[in-house]
Each structure stands twice: as structure tokens, then as C-alpha cells.
Image (tube, rainbow, N blue to C red):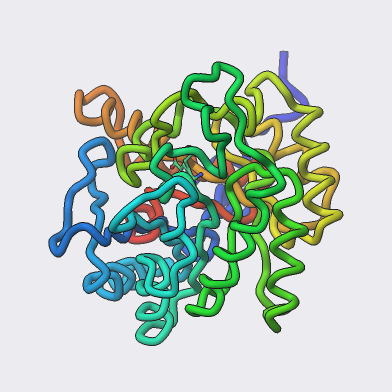
Length: 326
Ligand code: PBG
């Protein structure tokens, strides 16, 4: 019996690249960096091997290391010098992200994206304002509408410091529209918004909360981040952000949510981003450390799969390592 069609004909070394459907390129990758106002030395992040928190004075050097690998875009996270109930260091002109962004944009050609959120800046670790007695209240909620004004202040202050793009991640209803309006009022109508449109309440953020010191002091984020069970709701979140003027639509985490990436790709013409989060990075490192997986191969396969599902851009802690080998 002779097969009529033989897909193996196109799997030889000479032709494989010609028929390859998906390509990974350094220009698709965004590298996260952590700038820490509480240290004057680099501090390794225990749960994210190869990553460090860097002092503001080292932010430019950190970005240059990334640019040498071919990655041109970064997203900046900050660890502030102090925290309070409202997270006021998030919009301070001399805040850690603002200082770092000013230096990076003045001294490098990197494309600088800033994360617009409050959880690293509030003493309670939630992504917005909470009711006074919320700590004892099992039905705790972040107050949605009062939080919008703070997000506007953060986005404006980061853009004044030179951010090329802002990325709101707090899952506050109306956040994209509020930030768009504030940026336009300040004359920043050319600055795009990458919305964390479908951001799930995920256990894969664990190592990041170590890295950025943003774990909630009590309660959890399931009353504002999305339920991992829901896919139709993700399309609703995305549609709302599109209506409010989002320029880039992000899904987070990436690998466990590739169905969502694929659905958004099929329904919208906007660029789609996926955030290959800290837990996705940490678990591959942990398995590789045990000798159970080959790190470079699984990292590359992960990123390729995210692109194949339909992502145009990938935020990933593997950015430098993979770009260096492309
Ligand atoms: C801030 C924020 C988080 C991440 C990115 N921005 C933490 C969270 O929502 O708890 C997670 C990134 C990662 O795990 O790599 N809201």
C-alpha cells in the first residue's frame, strides 16, 4: 500500500525552512526589567534565575545588555522606596519607574513600555484603592472607579518621563478609556496603550510577586482578575478595551491560555501580545536544573508556540537568552 500524500517529503533539512509557517525574531520580543529604589546593588531574583532587580543607576546598563542581544523593547517594573494605602509612589515625578525611564530614554534607543498598576506601590498589595476595613472583610473589593483617576496619574507621569507606550495591568473596568483620555488631554495622543486585556487570576505569577514585591498582603485578586475557567468573558474584556481605544491587546499568562490568543487573533486586526509570565519561566528553569529538560529547546518551543497561536509580540523573561541564539 503506497500513501498518496507524503508530508515527510517536506521535512528534509534543505526544505524545512522554506515551508516553515512561523518564525521567531528578536524584534517580536519584549524584555521585562525590575528597577529597585531600595538597593544600590543588583539583587538576584531567587525564583527567576538569571534575573535581577537593579538600582536606578544601573537601569541604563541593564537595558544596554538587553539591546546587545537584539531585543529592542523593554517593559519596566518598579520597586518603590516606600508604600502607602493609595500607592502614591506610582505617580511621583521622582518615582522609581519615572527616574529609570528618564535615564533609559535619554541614554539608549530602547523602546520603553511602562506597566501601569498599583500593586507594587500599595502597602496592601492590591491593584487599586480598597475600602478602609477591607482587611477583615472576606468580600474585599478594590474600588473600581476611584482607582481610575490614580491610573490616569500614573500613565501621565510615566509618559512625561518618556515612556513610549503604557501597559495598564490592573483589570480595572474602564481603565483603557480613562488612560486614553488623560494622555490625550496632556498632548500625548501619539502614545499607544497596550492593554492587559485578558489577564487571568493565575498562580503562575508567583515568582513575579517575589521579584516585584507585589503580593497582596491579604485576600486575592480573583474579584478583579479573570477566572481561568472563562473564555467568552475574555472576548468581552477585549471588546471593551478595543472600544476604549486599546492599540495592542494582551493575553496573560501565555501558554495555558493559547486558546484565548487564537480567538483574539481570529476576531481582531489589532496586534496581539502574550505575556509568558514568571511561573512559565521558573518552571522550565527548575526542570532544567534537575536535568529533566533542555532549557534552550523548551524555551524556544514555548515562544514559537505562542507565536503559532497568533501572538505578534511576546513579553518574556527568556527574551535575551533566545535572542542571543537566533
Ligand atoms: C502587576 C503585574 C503582575 C504581573 C505583571 N504585572 C502581577 C500580578 O498581577 O499579580 C505578573 C507578571 C509575571 O508573573 O511575570 N499587576
